[in-house]
Image 1 (cartoon, protein in one colour):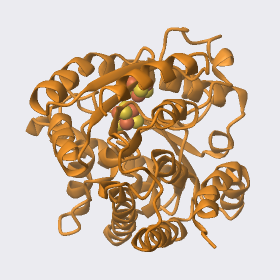
Image 2 (cartoon, rainbow, N blue to C red):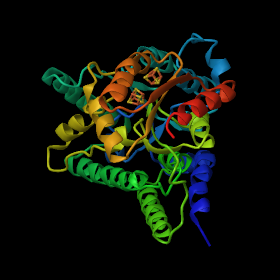
Image 3 (tube, helix red, strand yellow):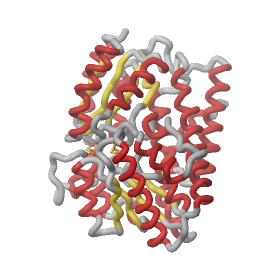
Image 4 (cartoon, helix red, strand yellow):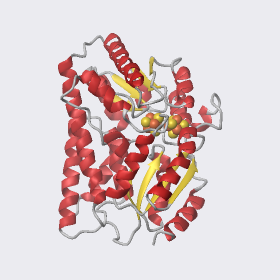
Length: 383
Ligand code: SF4
Ligand code: SF4
């Protein structure tokens, strides 16, 4: 019997059981740290014996409540995250002992000021540039400041040994995810884009790192087996799509559905949660704080200026995954991704000679018909 559908579905279950899971950890005395961004050096939390949980809202449900305090014309991720916090509807926020945020975009950093009125909050000053040496000096200091804050709040010592251990397990998780998402390089892809997303987005709800790593490895091995035995999950004629832009998951799955229902197959996610977050490991041969600082500051998010590393990464991915077209998903009012879209479009069209489209969307389901029409027309060009 093919076990793959039930293995993928386990990620939905992990999401639904999040409340019980985090409550169990809390009751066992573990400290819970809420995070919002790929720049958070989670190894520090792990080394302090705590668990990091993502507080990024991906649902439209709490947005009306958030808009009582926040402007309507703001990124839905920020509104959703804040709405969950003030309505006590998110178990991860409810159980968090400390929240860690970074000065990424303006909306988020101002929202953190409001969150700081509800929970203990630590904001890391993220440099706006990841090229200059001064940026690295600042970021290293910020990592040390976070270490001090965690040690002070949780009454623990983060020793170099504990940090090295944490770096090792986080690298293992990254390697397992890389092996999984690189299945998308095969042609035809042995997994659909929805399945890739289920694992990349869903794995954040599997809080036991060891278990999560083993599960991804087992899933990857099973998919390879099935593929070698001739099982095909996608059509060899389906245009191969790379998705880039703002974080994807929850309500924004509608964009992936629109691509795949119109005959395309998403074989690569450059977004946070995908390649951008996982492709670079923390160097285990270097002094731990230095190595952590280097890895995280290299993340090519549009909040950096300039952000040429994103174009370098896109170029490599377009070649390696044999991409036919690039779809950029931008959350409404996300200025950094929206403005950077012009450079990405030019690069993809002129340097890589393939079609590019961007869609600006929010967490409502109002634009599902429009998304489908636009994706249908885009994919037509790729056959
Ligand atoms: S897109 Fe940028 S700001 Fe948003 S979570 Fe990712 S790294 Fe952080
Ligand atoms: S998607 Fe854009 S606006 Fe929204 S939180 Fe991330 S960087 Fe900020």
